Image (tube, rainbow, N blue to C red; front, side, top):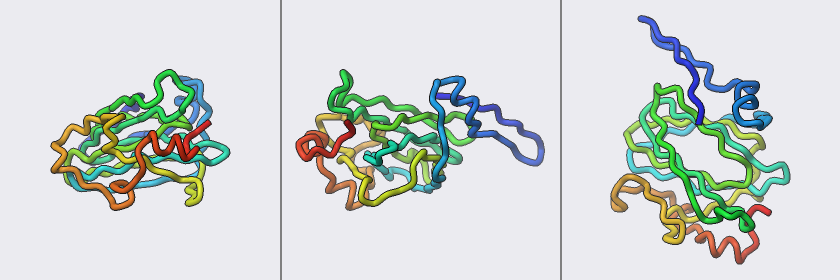
Length: 175
């Protein structure tokens, strides 16, 4: 996770939330932006776990602009020693924090407040034939979303998504 400075005065604030050379200096990763996304969610909305099998991979640079989210990164690489494990990072609007999600990892988040706005840059554009999802309630992963399960709101696509083990059997995980 990285934090960028926020310059505030009586007019509001300004933040450089993405600077390629700073990301490369901090992580060693050269991040090229191919698409920018913005989502707004009410409290309890879960988006993910999503990933891309695009040949170029798809890294993400994620920040919360307003509200608050629990951002979840899942290792879905079958040959990894941390396969099926996840980490969660709380991102709060106005904090200046952002997180880099490497290609080959699954990503999701839950909105912890009404009107949470998330901005994320991706290194490869959306490709419907190469985009996949894993059920965010997969008990084998066991994500602690931070809200009671009855408060979670999933899209029909995410709710009916296969579990991680099913995606592995299908051969639909990063190599």
